[in-house]
Length: 164
Image (cartoon, rainbow, N blue to C red; front, side, top):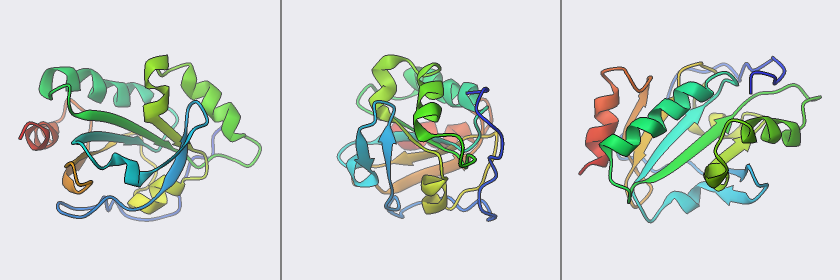
């Protein structure tokens, strides 16, 4: 996605991911195949939710999913959100096409993208090169959240929450 145009600043706001025990806020977006989805769909199974708000954070997102194979059961759903604030002249289709070049095809339906920062706004997060990561229980409630890279000490919080 490094070829995406600049201008990725989201509306000002402090880091305020939903806290432990809170339900995931309502939002919707399209996946990389253009299928529409809503946050309500993330209920029904524990979920590792990795969110990036910067077009150059794809490698850091991938790191979380690579590590998940060693830290959580296969029954834990892996979901990625790419929520950017792109200039008007960059279409969502163009952004989706760039993302498809970095995301393996078998994960396209589990990768939701919006170019206007709507998911970031719903989650209360701002633009950052560092991923935001949430562990959700089967009811869609947050059991842990961090704003960190997978190699940080904070990552243990996510792995611990998803291994219960």
